[in-house]
Image (cartoon, rainbow, N blue to C red; front, side, top):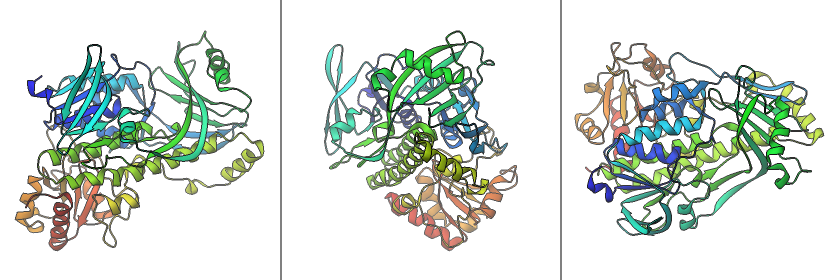
Length: 521
């Protein structure tokens, strides 16, 4: 660790998965990052139990892909059944050979965090201060001062920027005095994390049971780990619900008994959808919120941690460009503009699924069952990783995106670049980490030299998709069929900034990007 780590570029409060990903992404780019975490030891029990394909790609960019293989397993389907066992919804979750990751991966969160912690320890410019609780914050025009309490007393840390990744009870959000927009949905659920003595005897069903007599869920939490969840019914008090006796009684719905499994954890909690009204401080604007500090949602769409990691990724590359002097601070305005509406989309879907599964009125459940049983598969809502990752209409209009010209971006997933093999010696992706201009045409004829140079000053690169580079033709087919255009500019988070069909449109595309980020002339 270098001595100048004591005066970091960025302070991160909280070292769960969101804080871990954010701090690693910044440190990988060479910035001094200090993390403060009030807990001495990492939390040893699971909370999140899955991530989608897009998050897998993002985790791959921080170097933990191989470490996740032993603690993750592909989820084959998403199933909702009613109390009579009738299938109300069923989605096959694909394992596409073109992608490094399955559509959904069940994960043992302590294994994920251990991999991220190990990766962070490899970066000499990343300092993690455990046993340091944030208790005060002062924002200045050019810096942020954070007061932390330790066993030795209070200390002050100073950085250029600060990000609160400190969970639903965020000290940082409390300091900013930011209110929430809260959904109408609220329900008490119990999560039970179980280790089967013989996994073959208690296979995970990966099923959500919309039984009005007792709504419940059976999920994989990674190899050798199961997660069961149960709705609190009105006749039971929260205090009686949140007991080990109640947990074992409810686990009996799945034939889970003490002789078959170890109960690692049980916890009752209130599900609610909340989205902070501001994700950045007023005034100098040097403080940001990410992850559960900015939003919470019911678990039924599996998007809580995923949404937080998307926050971290979005903010990391934008902070990098501003710290490097390649972009103006106005670029950071696009963080909330893009991420807040996308978080709201995940909240709304999670609430919808929570209400669907948690219906306890038999008459309402009957209407629900009739309606869902009458639907054809074509009526099912989208649920792919690309659909979750694709920016919504609000984000496209308010964030760092070029609005599509007529005829472009026709496919539902065309705002997210495919994950495909290339001829790179390290077998890495062509995209991710920096801006990448993918082009079928000769770059010298398509891109004005001055703009090409300014794109490289922004950290971007231009990739000519010859057959030797695009070895499977995946990127070529995507540009022709889904965009459709001979060139597309891809952001560091795998989302497409915009596309161009000729040199004139390319000049507009790159000129618009450079102006939008406030790049120096």
